[in-house]
Amino acid sequence: MPMEQRGVDTIPEEERTSGPRDLVSILLGSNLCLGVIVFGWLPPSFGLGWWASVTSVVAGTVAGTALTAPLALVSLRTATNLSTSSGAQFGVRGRLVGSVVGLLLALGYTALTVWIGGDVMVGVLGRLSGMPANGVSYGVVYGLLAAATVAGAVYGYRVLLAMSRVLALGMTALLALGVVAYAPRFTTDALPEAGGYLLGGFWQTWLLAAVAAGLSGPVAFITLLGDYTRYVSPARHSARRVLRATWLGLLLGLLVPQLFGTFTAYAARAALDYAGPLVDAAPTWYLVPLLLAASAGSVGNAGLMLYSMGLDLDAIVPRASRATATYVVAVIATACVFAGHHLSTAQDAMTSFVLLLTAIGTPWAVITLIGSARCGGVYDADALQVFNRRARGGAYWYTAGWNVPATVSWALGAVVGVLAVSLPSYEGPLLALTGGVDVSFLLSGLVGGVAYAVLPQPRDRSGHAPGPDAPDAPAGPALGDEAVRA
Image (cartoon, rainbow, N blue to C red; front, side, top):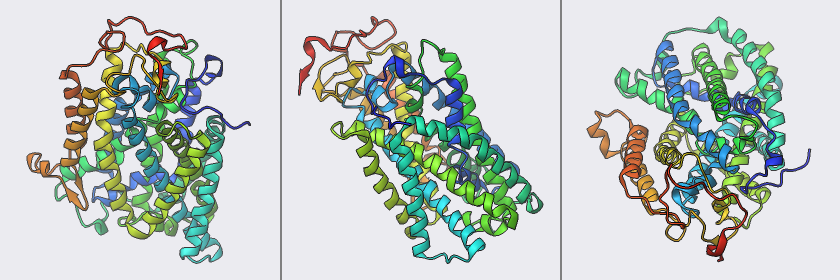
């Protein structure tokens, strides 16, 4: 299979050969991994019982999917990734906001997947062969996972899609075996080692779990969905079918592994750590399947995240090729894996990461969706590529390439979110107004969306304000007399 040559440029119609079924496959297959499974462990580690944990995961995932799934339709119409598509709202340079948010999201999830997958692999290999759990062992395993991940990410979308199809079947079978393996040890009681409710009360802790374990899953895809739907042709597949496939793929791809994580957390009595108790509680016959799940699943998920990181860095630095950008972010992600292993506990690192990125990313997603509704889903695909060509002008040039009101709206939402977040090592001052309950994602999305809705929007270069009444965007390859080389 040849290496993908496309970066964040517009995908030609003849290359848009994927369909809704492929979208389900890639969202399901790539997420059946320990990097997603481990999020199901968070509610039990917060001190919640079985049913409270399940309801928090389900409620958060459904709410997050409702926000995130419509973003898939943006790239269906623009034929490029979501951060580049957001140039219609933020400006062709202002869409760097989306590129940076996407880069940080993918970086964190890539590192987390390799970290957790590698820890489980070391534990299993220790039980199978007596391999010591020392720095050398972790270094070798992390390195092998990172190398395999890079290979898939560099070859690109088609390889990752083929891998996801296999993983969708293989990992489902391995997780089904896992249910049988851990069932004899399962209990619905809260884990006493967790020390009671993390935030002192049931509802505060339940809401934290709904955000950290449930909502964070779909929000991780706010910039990723377009990486796949840009290869789907709207001429052959309706927006309704693509939206249904996105809903199905996100719900199955997130709820199945996360609820498996919740189930095994209670079975393994994994209150303070997940990887170690998971390995210790596994019956001997399940060690090899667990090793396969930790290795293959981690490569599939981290490969997809690394692929997205490469696209985002390629969007930030247009002179770099997608392959070069992927190699660079792979080195950074691997460094983050070692830092996480040596410098932080899994619970603190995961909770802090997902809450902060959710607070920062939610207003970007809300603004992009409002902007898509305003323009009626009509985009000038060629004008979105101005920054990538190192040119000036076009419908989305606004003020030196920035839509200032949109950027300010995102910044306001992000700042409010950070000020309202509750982390293991930091509590925002706005928590005093919410009774200590972390609703940072709600506040950040609300503030960002309201600000964007009420602030006057600039007119595009043809003199029309963005909105459903604006004339259809030109489809030609040129930007006209306003396109001036930088």
